[in-house]
Structures are given as structure tokens and as C-alpha cells.
Length: 142
Image (cartoon, rainbow, N blue to C red; front, side):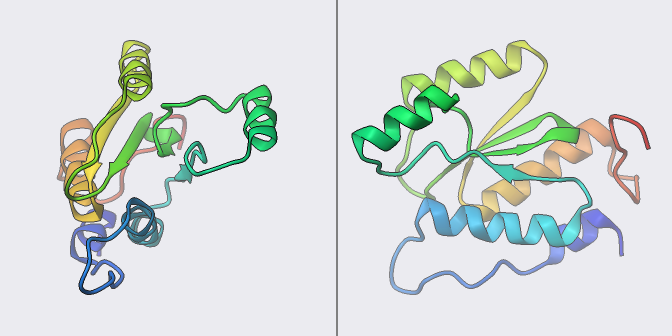
């Protein structure tokens, strides 16, 4: 089975019943199926969350920057911003980062939930690499 077929057909992990999944739950589900489907590395940018003033100051001095997208796939130059399925919108810092990243040749996808992220990544792969590829190419050397 190709990477794309596995990714397209893999069931998402179960989500909570009776309520809208959180952004965290959606992102976790997406990362799970991505890592089981592709050799490409994906990692999270821990910019969100509530922190005390001291911790926020420490992280800011280390380079944490508000608005950076949630996930990055380096070999595809692809950033993914997660939002809840309903509600959730980009703030000005996120819009600024998205514009900057696209201006330097990176790709940014804003996804409303894990299923939307899956569909947008499938579309991205088809457009960037071609659907007929069995294995996705490595952009920087093979």
C-alpha cells in the first residue's frame, strides 16, 4: 500500500462523543495518522497554552513567537495551522506569520479539524508531487 493510500484510508483515532473535539484532540489525531503513513518528519510548535508571566517571558527570550503555525513538515516546507471544526479564526499574529512564510517559499494550510487537515495534505501532495507517485519524493536528497 502506498503512503498516500494508507494516509487516505486510515481511520482517525476516536474523538470524544457528545462534544466538539478540541484543537489539541484534532491535532493529535492528525499527527497520529501522518506518522503512521509517511517517512517525512512532522513536529509541533508549542506556542499556545496558558503560562505564567515568568514562563512566558522565559519562552519569549528563547525565541517562542506568537502566531507561528502549529505543525511543520520540513522536507515539504509545509506548515499546518489547526483550528477547531467550528469557530476558531486566525489572529493578526498568525496572519502575519502565514504571509511571511509564504513570501519565503513555504506553504501554509489552515485546517479545521483532523479530517480537513488530511484532505488538505492529500491535495497538497497531489499538487506538489503528483498523485501517481507511490512514494513521496524527498525534497532534499534521497
